[in-house]
Structure formats: structure tokens, C-alpha cells
Image 1 (cartoon, rainbow, N blue to C red):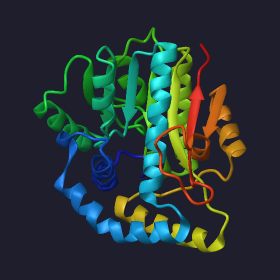
Image 2: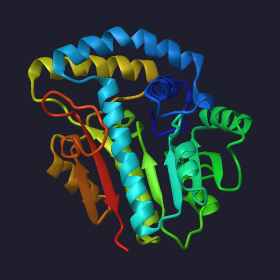
Image 3: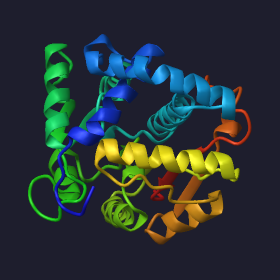
Image 4: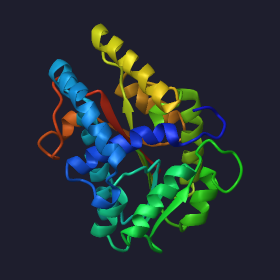
Length: 286
């Protein structure tokens, strides 16, 4: 993606595949199952199997690790802090909104995405009777600097600004160079700083240390970038580097979650060796 407004069709390609993974593993709703996603799931299965055999993990492993850890941290914020507002940016065909609303009927859930994907998601949720005053879908463009789809305008319009909220970006940030996505993180930190107790949850992928695997991922990144018309980026090389960067963007309290610390605690698949994915939990103190 560039700094300018972008067509959502490219990244929608990965959103549909991710949605199919959630559905296949029993995390999603039939209302969000798509034929395109199912086709992509079948087409990717040989690659996923080869990757699992070669490196002890694959895309599906990392998707499930990050998704279930993020879910756990949202639940913790709701139950322990009493947070009642959740914004999922780049929601795609994520089932998180449906699950959260079933578990917490009074929760104000807003799903946001680029206009084409937001419209597609809204139609599916509406047909399933899921949309309402406390479950909304809205267009957003995190790169926009003016207009109704800016980050600042959307948050001010759809939430009670006197209360903290949880903001989630899952499967979004790696499609931007670090300089571009850091501008979004700084803007988000500024917004949330006016809502003490708010939490931002996201994920980051690290480059592996093995040269062969690093070369393979480079090639995969270029392929995925071409398919999504974006620049796939690995932003950090270590947990301290990630922590320091988010602190520099304006988040005073940053925890980097390694999936290995959740093995045996959450029902997540285990990688052989070090997982490539981390979950970032950036907080504004209450």
C-alpha cells in the first residue's frame, strides 16, 4: 500500500484465506464462510503441509497462535478492567465480533475495514441478523489524513469517548513499511492517551535466524506482496526491539507475548522451535 488511498481487493485475498482458516478450525460462523476462501484453503494445503514438515510451523499455525492469544487478552481486558468497547480494524471475515457479542451481549463491537470489504462484511452480518446498535461495521482508511474515514473521525463517531476501548489490528501491519505503519501507531497512541485504560493488540512477525528459512520467507513475502499489491515487511528482530519501538510511538506499557509462554495454557498449536509470530499488547495506564 502507498500513502494514498488504496483498493481493498488485494488484501481481501488474504482476508478470505484467513477467514477460511477460522471456519475450518471451528472458530467462525457459517455466515462468514466464502467460496473463494474455501478454494484458497484447498489450494494452500500442499504448501502448508510442506512448510509444517520443513520448519515445524506454517501460516495456519501462526494464524491460530496470534488469533487465540489476542482473544484471550481481549477477554482479560473485558473481565478484569470492565472495558465495554472493542474496535477491530481490518476485520475482513474475522469472526471475533460475532463471538464477542455472543459472550458479552452488552459489548459495543465495531468492525472496520476499507470500504469494499466493510460493505461485504456488513451484508453478511445483516443477512445473519447480527448487526444492530451494539454491533456495527464501518469503513476506515488508516492512511487517510482527512475525511470521514480517518482513524480519528471513526473512533470519535462510533464510541463513547469518555471510556477506554480495546483496538485490534490482526493481519494488517505487516503490509506496510515500518515508517508508514509507525505513523498509524503514533496517531493511535495519541487518541488512546485521552482514554486511560485503553489497550491496543496486534501481531508482529520476526525474521528467522536460519539463512535458508530466511531466504524462503523473503521469496514468500515478495509473492504475497505482489498478490496483495503491497509491501510485506518484517519490522523487528527481537522482543526488546519491538517493545522499544512501541514505547517510542507513545505507548507507556508494552508487553510482547511469545506463543511459547501460552503453550498448555491456551489451546494453540505449538511450533517446532521458536515461533515467528509475537502478539503486541500496548496499554495506556488507567
